[in-house]
Length: 366
Image (cartoon, rainbow, N blue to C red; front, side, top):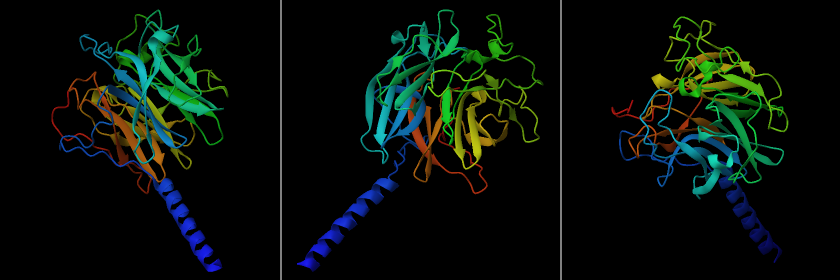
């Protein structure tokens, strides 16, 4: 009888260890596309989604996405053909199962200070609260960055009555360092208006593209440390320096590697990786630094062009595997109606990242 109980207990223990090990190693399987032009299939097809901001909260992966809809506007350099009036949250288990498209997380109609349109969001968690950061245009058609909160990672989120004081431009992303300090990185030129803030104040008559001097340093992204409440900046907004391999600022004319929009931060050991879109050259580039303020030194291409004009991403690590979340236009073939995808990638032994290629066709749509 004693021997029988020991055998049963061993079996129970084995099953328990097996189930725990499965949960530990759970990773989403790449959705491979049967169409040889595309590496991956869209994560969801029932709505158009873009600008994926992926995070792990609890036992699930949450992707905070722009919800693209038709505009009827003519495509131009200011991005008027992009029309995002709400955000949708997609979630799935760490093994990729249980995929769910949640109801509207936040609508522009519920943001008192916003006159029109959202652009790319990000999310964070601290102090028992989930934070959704978003850019929207105010009554003067100037992009500001707002914050909304929820006790549920899928929302719905409630927006604060005013944008973050001192904020401007687009594409906010937040990073919480190992010591608990939180930082926001943001900015985008052309339609993102960053070039109109180079004097320190918004210039309504400023350039609609860049500063127009090819041999001058390129416009750089911005950052600020957040207060512990995650609702306000704790310091003045700072310019981030992105340097070339010679240690000099990247120039406006270096279109293949200069910052355009979509900053994102991840960290390995003591190395901070700043990745970003090069905009009209359609790459995702990355640079590295030894502290969250930079300077960051350009290292190479993270992602090659996708189908569609914009290239916007996020990265997460699930157990020992890194994933890139991105979008393209496979479903619609239109640059303003996009679909979210993901793929695996790795860091080489020297910390470098081999360029990620996800589109192999010739119809790039730009």
